[in-house]
Image 1 (cartoon, one colour):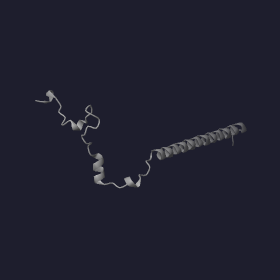
Image 2 (cartoon, one colour):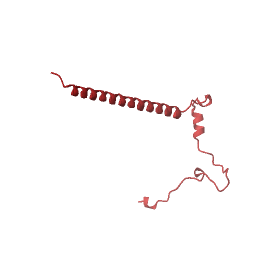
Image 3 (cartoon, helix red, strand yellow):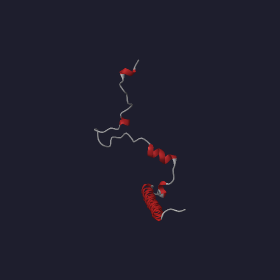
Image 4 (cartoon, one colour):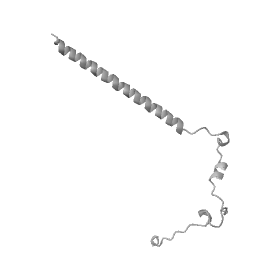
Amino acid sequence: MGLPPDLAQLGDDLVAAARRTTRIRQAERRRFVAVAALTGALAFAALTPAALDPARSKFTIVAAAERLAPPPCDHTRGARYALAACEGPMVLHRPYAIN
């Protein structure tokens, strides 16, 4: 016993529509993943630092200490400018902290 021809045709049309919708969604998903991968690859290429030149590739403690040393306390910009480290120790006036 089978279905009447009009119901069989309706079932075939519903199956075809479901397959078409599934193919469209899969294509959209593939496009989304491809765009996300391309965007990620471009961001990685743009944000990855370039290789250091040979003069900077060797790390030594002396070179690091020279770069991280505090600046000298000469007044190169005149009397109006003084580094905070050159003025002496910083003293905070906090009478409320004394018990």
